[in-house]
Amino acid sequence: MSGLIGRKIGMTSLFDENGKNIPCTVIEAGPCVVTQVRTNEVDGYEALQLGFDDKNEKHSTKAALGHFKKAGTVAKKKVVEFKEFATEQKLGDLIDVSIFEEGEFVDVQGVSKGKGFQGVVKRHGFGGVGQATHGQHNRLRAPGSVGASSYPSRVFKGMRMAGRMGGDNVKVQNLRVLKVVSEKNLLVVKGCVPGHNNSYVIIQK
Image (cartoon, rainbow, N blue to C red):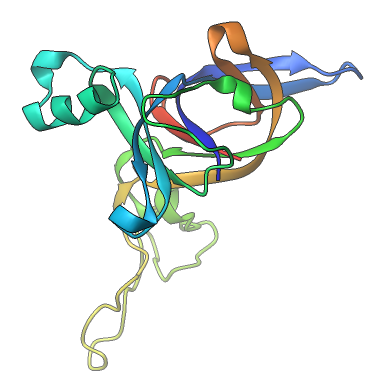
């Protein structure tokens, strides 16, 4: 599956040929360097390892510097493997946004925004007192009962309770590519993608 590592720039909107305003996300996609070529003979599987976004040498380990030196490039901040890449690439090759075409569909994966410790109303959509859906009587945003006492005398795994929300790996599928700006390595896709601005995303097609 071909793809690139990118950085979410932010959201904007475009007008289509019918004059409809379409919300879209701008992604800086690549250029990415092939930092390793995985083969069946050596690694037991085939994949391409791509690196994105230059990293300061003094913040890199010697092992990492030696790894990237084999590819003839500087250390990279983000490294991702792509299995079953559509085209054959060699160590040190540069892959840019030109692998995508306007009108095709891509999947974008990223880490969603972290929202901290949240209660059950925000985290799971509990109704609160107005809808009286979970046993609470006079407390607006309380979770209500979480289980019986004598049996099973414990709380089942997966019980929807308060806790940390966000910060999950999320993949949004079938986003249409609206525009490819090759000279600036920009990819404009319809809709929103997970993560905050300047966060890393993985684009697959």
